[in-house]
Length: 334
Ligand code: UT7
View: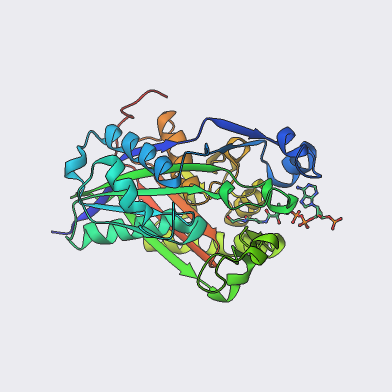
């Protein structure tokens, strides 16, 4: 009998501290009007100085297990999508595993903002192959730790957060299709140049601010509006579905203008393209599961709904997943 992976729990965590566009006006030469009209973002969350990516991940993971009603001891794999690990090693997944009291294998996946879709693929593959029956998949990032708050073209975009799903083996189909892609020829478009093996941290590199995120925003924008519609259609086709079969498109939250363009190119109704960008900014690997948790907790997803997740990011990477919702109402307060 074919084994399928279904989502049985959803959870997320946003740090308390809010950084508004007005706060950014005090740091760099920008305006609330520019930021909101060019990106759709009004505010984002900042992790506290003593809050690392694993803390955000553990909060989201705990909420997800509670929602699913599953004990930590029953999880047999933990995959964390992140590009802002607590440190180079050990993996953030191992640190998160300890914080959650899990005893299963744990590893990180770095596909930048596409991290959640890549991590989901790992979890689904483990279940479908029979290697695991219960996989916790977390997307967590603290990108504000790597953003240059002197660079107005990037510092207005990013926020911190975490989101997660629990996947379990089932007879009925849940995750229907996933398509991933990468194009390393675009690696220079979005990167943190220094601090790795190519350019280890030196005083000079830090003085040149090379340990901060750098981005060719226009190029990433063009890449996003090209790949998102294509990969979404590929994942739908792998699931034998059409755009019109979708109840929701939950895209990576990077820029409202990207979402509007994608909506037009896919020919999907505006009301079906979920956006929480205004309140969260771009939370990288966390953005899709965070958005999903908001929709789910608000009771806006019904059993039987077809939902597509689609992401893109540094690498360059991209990917989409199509899910048939099998869960009943959430096990938590909205
Ligand atoms: O997860 C993947 C992560 N990345 C993305 O998704 C980024 C995709 N790209 C974007 O979202 C957009 O390209 C940005 C929001 C980054 C930039 O928007 P844009 O409309 O492409 O602006 P631009 O880079 O073409 O800049 C237009 C102008 C420039 O001034 P000049 O040269 O025309 O005088 C910039 O210096 O806007 C200026 N500018 C700003 N002005 C006020 C850039 N950032 C700001 C700012 N405040 N924060």
